[in-house]
Amino acid sequence: MGLDKYENEDLIKYGFPEDIWFHVDKMSSAHVYVRLNKGQSMDDMSEGLLEDCAQLVKANSIQGNKVNNIDVVYTPWYNLKKTPSMDVGQVGFHNPKLVRAH
Image (cartoon, rainbow, N blue to C red; front, side, top):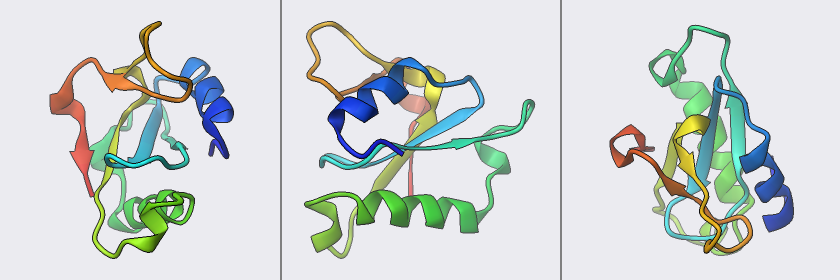
């Protein structure tokens, strides 16, 4: 988990293909990663694991922890897109269809 935008930036750079990235949608928050076993996909994640990750990013969002109904998005690490014009810790997606909400 990245505790600030600089740690988030490092996690963006040094992820693994098996990592799944979680973030509060449309608000600043920690970046939380879950490393799956090789051969597993997001579909293999239990509802309990998804809920734990969602609660972790919500608890580590200054804005998100004050709101009752927020979406948490998640996607494989390899789907994260970083361009030179983006701020520290900011990401986009190569394929928006690979992004899910919880």
